[in-house]
Amino acid sequence: MKRNISLDIARGLSIVLIVLSHTPFGYSYLFDFFYVQVFFFLSGVFIKSSHTVENSLYKKVKALIYPYLFFAVISSIAVLMLGRNTIDGIHLYDPDSFDNGPLWFLIALFTLNIMFLLLNELPQYVRFCMLWVIFGVCYYLGLNGIDDYTDITKAGISLPILLAGNYYLKIEPFFRKYRYVICLLSILLCALFIWVIPVHIGIRWMKLPDNILLYLLASFSGIAFILSISCIVESILILRKSLSFLGGYSLFILCMHWPIIRMLYDKAHISNNNIIAFVVGAIVCFTTAGIGVILKKYCRFFFK
Image (cartoon, rainbow, N blue to C red; front, side, top):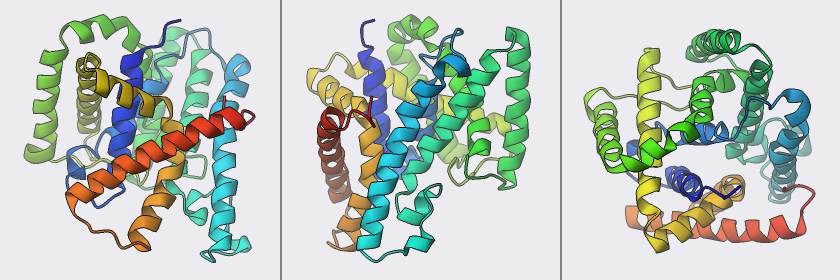
């Protein structure tokens, strides 16, 4: 099957936004309410109706849990060597204990995939109804700050996002044909949710709007923006190559960028200037992606 470059570009754009949001970049509020949802959406694109827990569990473990354990152990060793925590204070199930918080996403994505695969075994209409029931319950739990280390609440509130991704390839020709119109409309909607009806979403911290429809509308507006932009820049050679490269190694960028950024700003005392923050973010993205190339080649047990 031919690789879908626009989806790699979408991953690349989103991982750049995630990295920028972890620097002092002053315009993160323009995109921090949707970038995580883009990755949940993209995760659903290639899940087929034939995929079940039985035939897909090992693939999900290898794709998400193996990398999590690899970077969790490396981060734990680094934290211990730097004296930032003790052996008793480090717990592999808690990324914050070894100072690599973004790894939460791998656990949440794994839980989300397992939930969806379990639902995939049900008849279509039962699956659809159960998905929305689980979403509603988890959204209520999220509003009340209730979750555990499997991130089941975060996964549950992301189920509709992954479901939408599951149907994307069917409407991708429409997206490509009307990419400029969709881009303009999504920009207008995002502007609405930034300045007119401010919507603040932070799935990791379960920061959610009380209105469940605002959560869905704001999330899908941001997703539509990223997808339409990806279709547009696919024709621009330098952007296509650079962003698709970052998208192809987004896992490694996600897992390595935070300790590096923290070290640069805490120890090197880099200026909080927006331009410098953008440059730092870009350098970190390409550096960690480059390391990812090496790790993928020589640590094949952990990375498919």
